[in-house]
Length: 275
Length: 326
View (tube, rainbow over the protein chains, first blue to last red):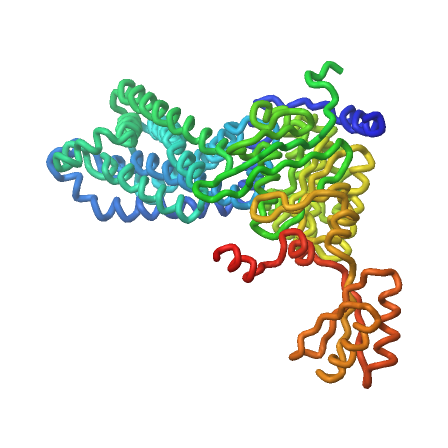
């Protein structure tokens, strides 16, 4: 023992084990993901194409819905639709987060993080935070383009529109943990893409996104009522349309936060699980 | 220092470690130990359980049975303490493709609790050490395979780990890069780091490891110093390519009278002679010169991992199996 002891203590004293605090971990990891974003802004633009296409198509396709019974009177369809697209595009961004996460798990950098003395949740939280920043940029871009190209002029004015975007961001960020949890348990990019894609479908369509919930057939209305996205869309819409929105916003944020917290707990468990 | 456990006798200590993945058993009662400042080589083919053992020791997955201590801490109950003292370089370069090599090193150093300025200094030091200074500020996605592996190894060293796990560190490296990696490992060990190295190459284990543990099918089939293992495998083999089957038969006869044990396949022109004594090679050459008509090519081959496997696990013996069944 005495023969090896000096060498060992030399190595140990060179690096007194001292961990980075959670805040440092979050800051460093979020910065890393954001740096990739700055280096490749095409990512923001490319992920905007889907929501823009949806917005353009649906505003033309379903414009006549505005004359259907049950549609709020005096509201143009585009003003009805844009807040919903804000929420669905935030969900779409969260889905991309999850797919990106699985790709990273394959590349090995995540394995390195897991072998380090850091809280596993901070890897996931940082990822979510960076993508929330990305999503915020998208929301602004969406607002500007919708106003410039499609004549989006909600009754709530610019403040209402920004408020709707902020709500969409918060709801998307919370519900996005569903996808992150899926990614942590499945760990296969293609599979995550299809499973999370399947999960997106009812979240987006079995909701009040494209027609008012009251105009849905009975069973679908029941599904929509249980859909956390419905609450987010209703709140974003009320804010954008300048209607009293406090109750809706509180409902949307608390439902999303509850679902998000449960999904986040599952995600961390899945992430921690040894391969 | 008021570290809770006293100085551990072993930096690596695993006892009866088993690991099941569903119905598949990846490890079966593995016991290994390595003192601080030594190199433990884990030798085995793909699927032998090397990576699983490394993952258990690096606290990445829990053993189904058995216990393991690394740097004096239990990998299950004190995994955080273990993670503070280890670094892992896996089979796939664990680096961020999007950012530069320097940013990768700073990232890992910062996550290990190093301040920004010290992290930058350490990154520059490591880039220099691994000959990456020229490419330091380019995104990693443009790096060659060898540069990536070097960066990966550098990232593992940011925190000056007590125990370093290298899972097939030189697979896919060109000979020069391989040699450079070996030099780095030797320097680390000199400075007191304990290294666990998995490899499929006997020469790599031979050069670096103080103790070699041979794994097959998740079990330890042999363990010992490189010299001991090689002694068990037997020595080198002289192989001669002769002019034709007649020459092979003639050579075999002549070599047998010299007391050697030639082996040959009558359908091929090659004869193999296990070399056991120091003068055997000279005897082979002399005999072939004297007794064999025509030209021949003589080569000496060192034992390979396959030879280690065959001699340690025993060749498949269908007759023995049949006898056992009757």
